[in-house]
Length: 464
Image (tube, rainbow, N blue to C red; front, top):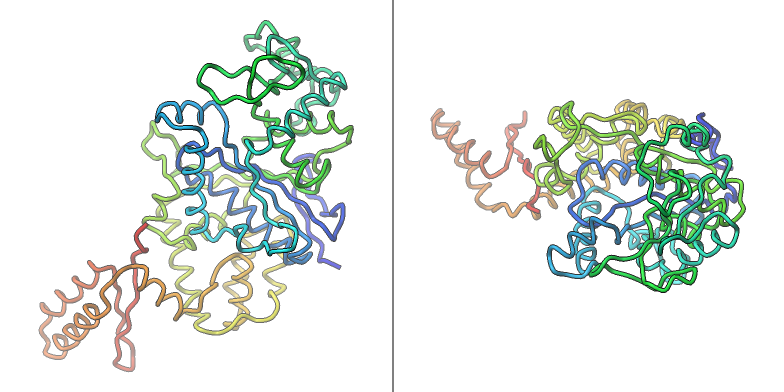
C-alpha cells in the first residue's frame, strides 16, 4: 500500500487524503503552454512543480501505474496574430516555439516523453496538442447542444451557463451572484452575459476547420473546450488530478468543469484540483513594461537548470514566489554543498523517510529540502535529492560535463594554474593575481587544498 499523500484541493478548500480512482492507474492533467512566444520564468513554475508531483506519484504507485497529460495550446488569438505577422502558418510558428520550450524545460530537469515512455507499453507522459483534437472538441460541442447546455447563435456555439445550477463551485463564485454582478458588454447573440464561446467563426486568413452543429461557415474552437476534450480522450471522463496556475481557476478551469460535467453527466471532472501561486521578480509583478520580463532561456544563460529548479522549489507551490538574484545565488551554493557532500557515492536503494514525509504533506518542498541538509550519508543524500530531480550525476561526472559543455580549453587552464603556483612559490604576487584573474575571466574557480594541490571548477554555465 502506498504511503498516505495529502494534497490541498481547490474544489473542497481543504487538504485531503489522496485516494486515486484506480491505484493501478493514477491519472493527472496539467494545463501547459500557449506556444506563440518564448516561455517566461513564471511559466516554468507549474512545469517544475507538477513534474515533481509526477515523480512523487511514480515513486508511490509505480512508474507503470501513472499517466500524466500536459497539454499544448497551439491555436488562439495570439498565435494567429503572430503567425500572420511573420507570414507563416500557425503550425510553423507553434512547431518552432514548442521545440524551444522543450529545450528549455529539458534543461530544467523536466521528465520528457522519451524519458518515461517505452515501445510496446502505454504512453505514461503525453503532450496532446489542441489542433490534433479538433474532432473530439466538435463531438463534445454537439453533445452539449443536444443536451440543452449549449446553443448555436450567429455562427457561434455558446455554453449556456445558467443551465448548470452549481456553476462556480470550483472558484467559489455562486451563479446568482455572478449574474447579479455582470457588468460586461454582452454580445447580442448571447442569452446570458456569463455564457462563453465553445466555437466561433474564423476571420479571413485565420486557421479554420469544418464547424459542428450544422454551421455552414468554417470556424475554430474557443479556448476552454480544448482541455475538456483532451483530458477526456487521454485520461477519461473523470480522472484523479487536474493542475495549473492559480490564475486559471476562473474562468478557464471553471469552464472546463462545466463543459465536461454537462457533456458526460458526471458529478465531477477531476477529484483533486491543484493550483500553484504567482511569481514576481525582485518584489514586483513581472511585466514587459517594467523591464523585468525574463524568459526561461535568459535565466538559463546565467544559471544551470538545477539551480533554477531548486530556486523554484524552495518556496511552497501554493505560496507566491519572489524571484531574486539573491535567491539564485543561495540555490547555487546549496547545490555546490550537496555535490561536495555526495561526491561520487551511489544513491541508496530507498528514498529517506525524512525527505519523503514532507512531500507527502501537500508537496512541502521547503521542509523536504531542509531534511536533505540533515542527511548524514552521501548515499542517502543522493537518493533523497534524486526524487527532486537533483544530483543525477556524480560530482566527477558533473565537473566533466560542465567542462565539456563550457568549451573551456583545459590545457590553457592547467598552464595558468601552473603559472600561478610558480608565481606564488616565488612570492611574485602580481603574476599570481594575473593568472587568477585570467582564470576567473575564463569562468574557472581554483581552490588551494591543504595537501598542497590545486583543484578547479567551472563557474559559468554552458552557452545556450
